[in-house]
Amino acid sequence: MAQNLYKNKIQTLKETLSQGLLEKDEIISLVLLCMIAGKSVFLYGPPGTAKSLISRRVSCAFDSNKFFDYLMNRFSTPEEVFGPLKLSELRQDRLVRSVEGFLPSADFAFLDEIWKSSPAILNSLLTIINEKQFRNGKDNIKVPLRGLVAASNELPQKGQSLEALYDRFIMRLIVPPLKQKANFKKLLQSSGAKEIVNVADELKFYDRDFKQIKSLVDSAKIDESVLNVLELLRSKIEAYNDKKADDVESIYVSERRWVAIMELLKFSAVLSDRQSVGLIDLALLKHCLWSEESQKEEIEKMLKECLDNYSPQAIKNGIDIKNLAKQIESTIKNPVEQVVKDSLLKEIANVHHKLYQELQKCLSEANDFKDKNANPFVSKSGYDIFLSSFKEAQENLEQDILEVKKLQNKVKNAKVAAPIA
Image 1 (cartoon, one colour):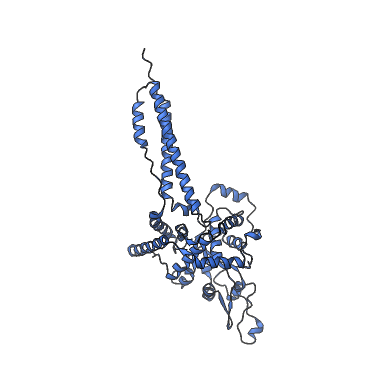
Image 2: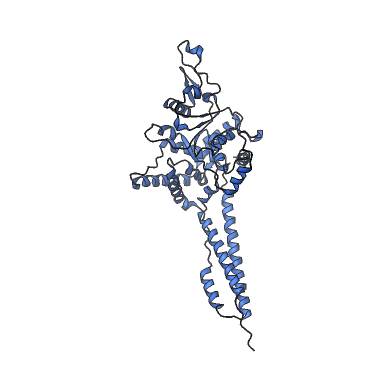
């Protein structure tokens, strides 16, 4: 595969689509992945967190982008979503809808408060997602829908026959309110993010791009290490379900879902300019396997455990700072000669230099891993799954450097023994 065929394009496109949207770049990139892959995605979060705006923005990345959006409620009718019945057909006892401008004619759709809709709408929606077809009268018409984004501030209720539809949303993304104080201030000072952004023609995806990407996805391989991790992860999920308390919801991943997830991972690999699914693509699984919010942490824990044997390991610092500090503090407990003090300061400076070099090496190796495994859809927290050893080493080295600086100040302030007459 040609180098930088898609990866750089996706990165630049993400930046364009994220303009004016704070703390939403990861969500935008994942929705973009799902739209290119033709998968449906569910956005879960409180009202007013830009879920609709995210969907509208991502549709700007495509040449064909007829958009349909609708706020569902329990009184919603099929006519409001799929189009009104044609009177001319009705007079001839045929139930045919005028679908232009409604969901069956859209390239992209956003359905808010999805679970509040009626069974009649949800059943037709299931067929559209599954088969990309809509039953209009006696005919099945092909639906151009490339991506469906559904949203709600609640998860589907049990016992409402919503499991089959929920299972079709391959990615389930939590969209939280702003977390960073600085971004909250920016939000208050902004004039509001625009629904539509101008995307350069060379960044857009056209029908010819989809054909090329699909061809590459169809020929993409799966690394043996990926298959091993997935097999182990599935076993861990089964073990978790066997041991959990009766009042705790099982983690259920259907065979259909596993297959759809693997296809999504192939798109992730191809759009990262790779010919095979690698371990880094598995970082996306944390968005695909949960059905209850309480399961997210457990899934991430299991995923990290499965990847530990394949993750790079940082070299442990061989300097015992506590023992060094103990020895030096014992030496300067009483006044020391200037030559001894100078010698201790030199020793501490050497230790500080070694620790600093190790810290830089640690940071460099972590960045090298990110560069070699670059994936525009994986966030910092996704890379952290692989780099926990480096993160721990970095924190320890930074703490050791701080302790060495404290020790250095103690020696500088140590009393010097008076010269012997």
